[in-house]
Every structure is written in structure tokens, then in C-alpha cells.
Length: 336
Image 1 (cartoon, rainbow, N blue to C red):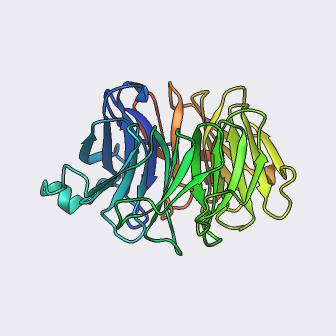
Image 2 (cartoon, rainbow, N blue to C red):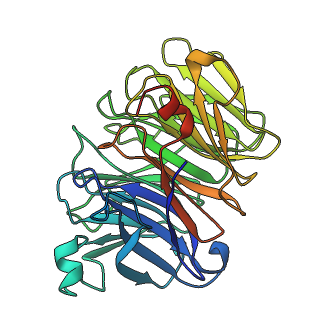
């Protein structure tokens, strides 16, 4: 397996996202001192093949600094050079000039276009609405609330209250308008209607008997979503029968930090884990991982599939390393 890599010295990786517009671009959100103290940096990285067809390491196009750690990042779905970050100081930042042309001309603004500040604690999850909600940002915080924002307004639209502990992840459904899910260290999976300004969950279930750190939606079946917990379990859920999970995968004794359903295959799923691994799963092939990648020497925190290149995956971790690669099992299957 050939990987493109980038090392962010003294910055520890928390999240990374491929551009929805440009196959070679990805953003990497990092923090100093493992996110416990210090500032944060946002890196715009590029992967470009050399003239002989070889794939060199990732190149850094630009780097932006914030006064607190950056824990998540999301590209704007309608402007190719705009993205948002989530910070340890409880604020969201919207940045512009995130492209090669601005970076090469040193025209990328060093300060965000706007800073949205309402949360009282760290924001650990950020999602920018797609299809039906292009101007809508969703933030999830350790202050136990979620907030819905219009990126053109300074103040939030709605505050959602329904978790009793730290919220780690919240995601819009890619296939059902105005529906989003959230998970928390209270063990709950909550479903919400973004148009319900009362800010109460549609449904709340005990997803795990431990902390839940990750969730994601299927890109193919509107009814399916997955959760990952500190119990090392990945569970699948069906909106039509939420009393119990429809499948369960065991990822080991350490926590599942992030999940990513493949946009290229309805049965493929990746997990980033606190045992320093990234695991590839294929639900058609049973309950064991099809591949375990051990490229990191610290917690793996960030994970994303490239929407433009079949089965290309990126991950990042606390070891300051970001990787871009295609898992061997997907190449061997003739899927890439």
C-alpha cells in the first residue's frame, strides 16, 4: 500500500476533509499539545503526481493559525475556497482563500471572514449542510448543546438541548432533508429535525453502554447510520426499527474515535481507533475487518473518503502524521 504523507511538527491531527470540488485538495485541522493547551493550525494540503507518474508526499499549500486548538473542519458546499473550523475556545471560524492560486500569491487571508462565538466549551464536531441546507452549519459542543447557524448571520438560529454529557459528533443526513444525528458520552444517539426551533430531539436511544464518540450516515440507504463507542463497538441502526441495532462490529478493546461510510460502496466502512489503527470493513464479508492499517503511533482521530477517487482514504492522528492511500483490500477486490 503506497501512502502519501505529511507531518505537522508540533501539531497533532484531529480532523481532515477532502475538498468537494478539487480531488487533490484536503484540509487538516490540528492542535498543539494534543489539544490540551496552546493554539491550532489549519493546513491546506495537495496531492499531485510527478511527471513520471509517481505519487510524492503531500505538499502544504498554506497554513492558517488560531489561538486555540482546532478539532474539526468542514468545506463549504457551494464555494470552493471557503471552509469552517471548530475550536477549543467554543468558537467557529469561517476561512477563505483556500486554493492554490491564493496560496501561491500569498493572498490567503490570515484571519477568518467571520468568527461565531456562543458555545461555552470546546466544539468537537462541525458539519456544513448539503443539498437542502447549503448555508447551514451544525456545531456540537462539550457544553452539551448543538447549535444551528446560518453562515451569513452572526448569531445561531437554534440551540438544541437533549444530551446530558459531552457531545462528540453530529452529522446531517445526506439523503433526508433537515434530519441530523448526534452522539455523546452519555451513551445516547439522538435524532433531530433542524426545523424544530424548540430544539428537542425527535428520538433518543441508548446506542452503547459507554461513551459514544462517532456517528455517520450511509450514502446509499437513507435509513442506515452507524455509531462507534469507547467500548470498541461499531453498531448499525435502521430508522425503521430503532429499538435495537441491526449489526455490530467489534473493533478491539479501545475506543472508536471516528467513522466514515464509503461514498463509493454501500457496504464499505472505515473506522479510526484509539489503538492507533484504521480499519476497513465490508458488511458483505462478515464481522471481521478486511484490513487493519497500522501507520500511526498515536490515537487516530481524523478520517475521510475522497469523493472524487474511488476508495481513496485519508487519516490523521496525534502523532502529527496525515496519510492518503487506497486500502489494499479494495484494490485487490478490483474496486479501485
